[in-house]
Length: 338
Length: 256
Image 1 (cartoon, rainbow over the protein chains, first blue to last red):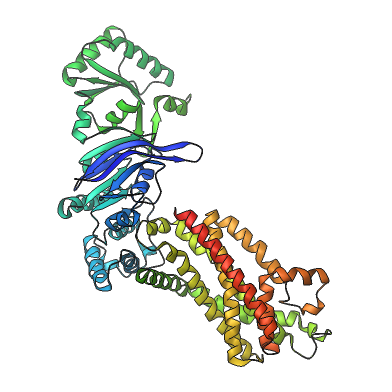
Image 2: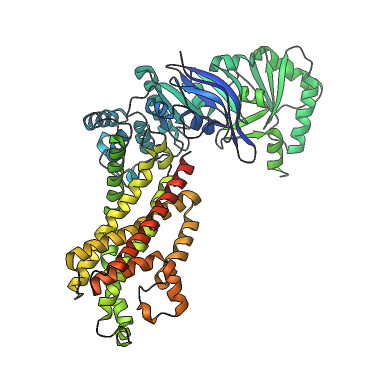
C-alpha cells in the first residue's frame, strides 16, 4: 500500500501563480523518495500541502491513509516534518526544545523523557542536551531539528532541503542518519533537494519537478538510462563567448543526423552530445570536426548523471550551488562581453 | 480539553522561561518603575500646587498612572515574540504538529498577563515604600490588578494579532509607538481630569487607558466609587474581548 498518494494536486497562489500544477505520484511504505528540482519549482509547496500546513487549491492527497484536507490532525500525528529553516527555539536548551514537542505530539511525561534520551544518543548530541540551542553549530541545529521530527515515531518524515547551507562533512553526516532512519527503522522518507548528488546517493526513487510539474519519475538508474549510453562533452571553454557560440552552432549542424548521435544539448562550456557508446563515438566526432576545421579544446566522456537527466527534460542545467535552474540563454547573457 | 490545557501550560512555561532568562530585561523592569516614580514626580512636582490637585503629593496622584503605563507599554510589545516565532520558522513547525491551534496565541497572552501581574505587584509595593497611601488597601490593589490585567489583555491580544497580520516588525513597531504615547497623554494619566481642556476631556472617553487610570486612581486616592469602577470594568472587558477576537481571527487566517 502506498503511504502517500496524490491526484492532480494543485496549489495556485494569488496572482494565478501555479506553484504546484496537477501532480500525481505515489510513495511506497519504507521508500526514500526524492523530490528534485531548482528553487521555486514547487517542492516546499508540495510538502506543505502533504503535511497540512496549507490547503490544496484542487486535487487530493492521501497521506498515511488520511485525506490531508479532511483529516489533518490524523496526518499530523503520523508524520514528522523537518523544515528548510531550522525551527528551533534558540533561547531554550536542546532538551527543552525536544520536550516541548513531545507534549505537542501527545506523549506522556515518562515516554518523553525516554524518547528524548534515545534521540540525543541517536543524533550524537547527548553532551549538548542541556546547552542553549543558540550555542549549537549549523550541523548540530539540523540534527536537533531532525530529532524533533522523530519524537513521536512517525511512519513518514518530510525533510525539506535537509542539507542546504551545510558544509560537505556535515552533509555526509546527515546523509548517513537519513539512510539509517530508512534502513534500520523503516521510516518512509520524503526528501526534497536541489542537490543532484544528494538525490542520487539517497533516494530509491526520484521525481524531477520544474515549474510545478513533475517532469519524470523513476529510480536514479532508470532516469539515467532514459538518456541512453554516454555523454560526450565538447568544449572550447577557453574561447570568447561569440566564438563559443559559433563553435556550438557549427558542431551542432555538423553532428546532426549522424547515426551515432542520439541527442545534443548546448551547455555552459560547449555542447553535450548523447551517444550510444562514448568510447567509439568520441574519436569519430573528433575526426569529423577536425576535417571541417573546428577546433575542440577539451573532450570528456562520462556516464549520464542526474544533471543530464534534468538538462534533457528541461533544456536547462541545475546549478547546485545556487539551487536555481539556468538556461543556456541566461548564461550567455549573464556573462556578457569580457 | 486535556490536551488544550497541557499545550497552554507547556507554552506558557516556555514564554516565561524565555523572559526570565534575560537578565537585562529583569533589571530594566525593576528599575523602570522606580525611575518613573521618582523622575516624573520631580518634573511635575509643582502640579500639586494647582487648584484641584492640592493637598496631595504628585506621587500619590501619579502612582496609578505608572502601573497603567508599565502594563500598557509591556503588553503592547507582546506581538514581537510571535514575530520571532514566525521568522525563525518555529510557528510553522508547531503548526505541523497536532498542537491545539488556539493554545498558541492563548499561551502568549497568558504569559503576558502573568508578567504584568508581577510588574503591577512590584510597582504597588515600591509605591507604598515610597510613601503612597492606598485608600482601599490590599483588596483595592487586587481589584486594581484585575482592571490593569484587562487593559493589558487587550493590548497583548491586539499586538499579537497585528504581528500575525503584518508578519514584519517594522509596521508593528510603528503602530505601537504611534498608539501608546498618545494613549497616555490623551488621558488623565498625568493630569487631573478637571484641569484638562474640554476637547481632551471628550477624547479620553474613548481611550481604554483612561478607564484603567480612573478606576485605579479612585481605589488609591478615595475608596470604592462603584459607579466609576463598574464603568471601567465594563469598558475594559469589551476592550479585552475585542482584542481577543481580533487576535484569534488573525491567527485563524495565518494558520489556514
